[in-house]
Amino acid sequence: MTTREQLAENWSAHVAASAACPPEQMASRVARWGDIPASPRAFVDTYIRGHERTLYSVIGSGVTDNPAFQPRIATAENFHIDFIVAPTNCGAAMHWHDTEEVFFVHRGRWDFDWIDGATGRTHTVTLGPRDTISVPPFVHRSFRSLDGDDPETGGMLVSILGGRRPGPVKWDATVAEKAKAVGAGFDADGSATRIG
Image (cartoon, rainbow, N blue to C red; front, top):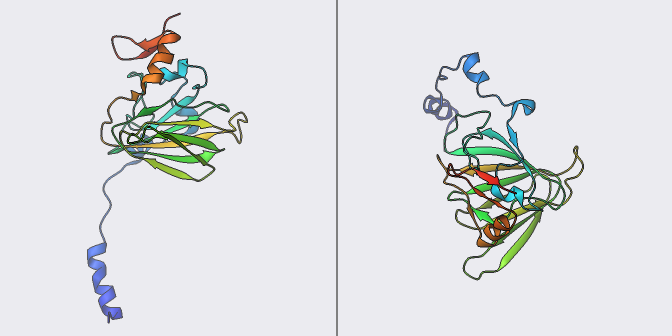
């Protein structure tokens, strides 16, 4: 049986001093809503009707189809956080990342679809405020807002992407065909763009 004295002695292994972090350093690690870079064209699928959305890049390099799009807080180790806002029935087309991606529903209701690569079947789960889903690497997923038209209560997701330097987005072949049909693709620098 542990005694009160033993509990007190064990504290020595659980106490440590803080690392240095002056106010100017912490200021570079603060993302205020009005200062977070936002892009309605962070991904090639945003040129396809029904996939309109705005990406707010909060922390870490994350992944986009626009290499010039930078987050508000660049310093992050092994994770990246973005906010996603979309009108009703809009969101990301089928794609995968080479790292785990977690979605936390901040506002509204969202449908998440994924493809089971073993069977080829597409499955759907509907999530509401404060619900969370963790999508494994290399699993095609898409999502759409079910009630995003109200700017105060409409759809907002928090996306947390794992990995130090996640690789580029890989799109389902059906997305490539739809993008090509509207003149969307990638320039020589790898940035998503559209001609026509």
